[in-house]
Length: 315
Image (cartoon, rainbow, N blue to C red; front, side, top):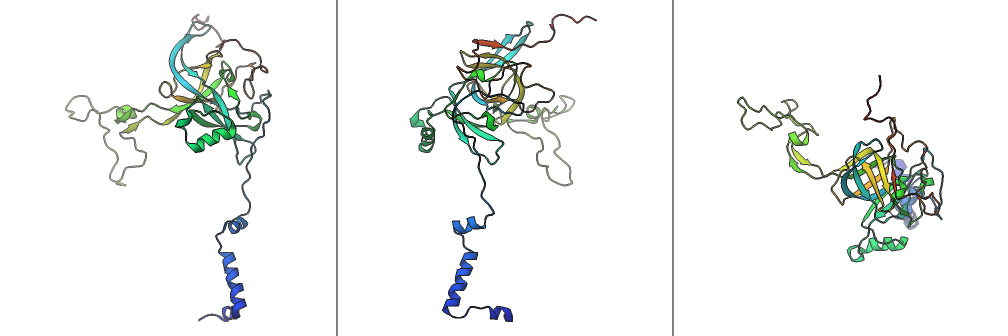
């Protein structure tokens, strides 16, 4: 049975039923207008407006854009003390700003950077329309980099190797070499079983994987599996040399990935007792601009500083 309150509020007549149906429709409508009316507010998107390319002043809280480079291989060079340093050569090929992306935070922005060239027949129509809308030639690779609004660059700006300062620290990101299915000794560095004294067919086995309770293998257990082929970031690599003619940078140490692979290079972010740029260095901000920035020679080599390590220190 219905209560007296429900019976009293039941619509009577055709007009009452029409008004009741309209009320129910407005409460449970799934139209876009009704959904927007129920939302408290729409998300606001921010995008820095950059009309022209001009030099600015670098601040410690500023974050410049990164670049896309190709790994050319490893070699060696000698610093001012005659010590050989292993380096990886990274080359920038027609690196340009493709678009400026909107973000939900006014304190940060994102730039879409493209590298290399690609034939129009090998690009989908949506992507070709994206390039034509921004007036940029088709690119072989696209990546996004977070920046601060003061480091925004106009669409079409070309970024060269002079964007980096010799002696600064960079973070390098790329896909590591795939090594296929590997055992625990190669993948995780296990010691393996005994080499002799009665060991049979258990020299490289992982051993026990758990106990009776809880009767299962914990997630993340180190076991054999596919090794490599993952996105890896190597932090705080010093830039040893910048070649403005070949548009290359020499980075100390090894870089993940195979030769001719696309590498993301950006200013280091996790600086613990480290200095991002050498003391007194002129930082091109937001990037190196020909005609506005100071002219640079073909090769600029980083200075290690300190004392000669080949001369023994006096007591």
